[in-house]
Length: 481
Image 1 (tube, rainbow, N blue to C red):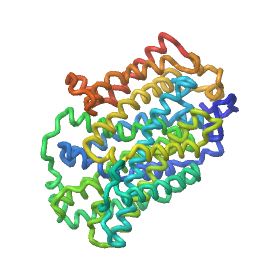
Image 2: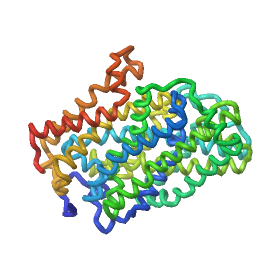
Image 3: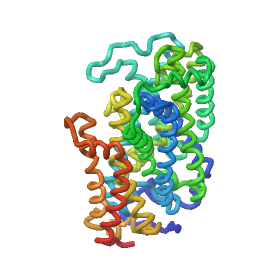
Image 4: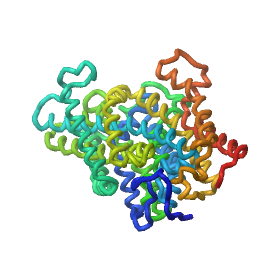
């Protein structure tokens, strides 16, 4: 169903308003390029290597990545549907299930996670620039006395801020510049991944030696497999929520569906495989597992080839960061006060928070990166996805009144702007995962084993529980349709 009628009220601005039909120009190839640009990044490269470090074989790690991305493709395409059907962004869609004010709670949770990712990607991109100049001019990129309050050197901080400024440029230019950044960078990013893998195989003496070097030092349990799968789903659980921010520009449902299905699982699996091969090769070539591709490229031996590869890694990080970690929080913060906060202003808020969180501390430990960061925010975002899909696809049968979504006293006002059904389902679905998170972060010493098991499958558990609870609450307290 299309609904492109006028909107009313004070809950909109030029960035949050529905996209007009003649502005929906993204084809399936544009959508696919978006996913190639987002998926080819340093965290994707390190993902499977981190799983191997936690006990998986190379093929188990690769299978986990593939399964996780096939699973997350389901909520991704389901939540993309209303964006394409009605031209509305993620925070506006949330108003149907959480209320015109309650939507801000869910949107801010998604936005804060994106700020964390923005900082992480900016740190990786700055490190790539830093290493590039170190190779060209011959200085030690790892040197320098750490600044006491920060834990990184002045030169590391400088290049972090330089890459941060590059991101701010695209924030200022807006959505169309982001589209072209993804389209132009996608083929080059895939090519450099392939070349890096060819170098690794050649230098290490073949795949057999690499896979032998990638053999785990410990045995993964079914619980460990579940935790790894949850982390893989959690990796894109952010985009599975705010995918309407992009699908609102798609020409048709067929374009958004095919574009995502073709590019997301294949690119993630391919680039994770590149990470597996290159990390395994470093054991053969250098005698140690180096899971950071910036360090690997720095050891290639050819100054200009290394510099070129690092520049491409920086471009890969930039394309991922802008699309995956700026668009959503920019819209989410704008939704707080549409008349005062534009997309640009929301993007700048994101960029500033990305500095303040000190992202280098989030990724210092690969184990903490998976079990605390990825699973932790998956416990928050899984329930939101369950509520969104239950509301739009089951309860409302894909029918929304767009004008009412922007009306302060319309049918989506619920109780003083808050949907009690949506909020109750969310908090009750998050609650069982809280003990596991507190134990993982060391806030509490120990928990019952079954609570730990629930946390290892946090996204799945939260999604299913919120889905069931929301529909149950809607039977008790029906909402206007």
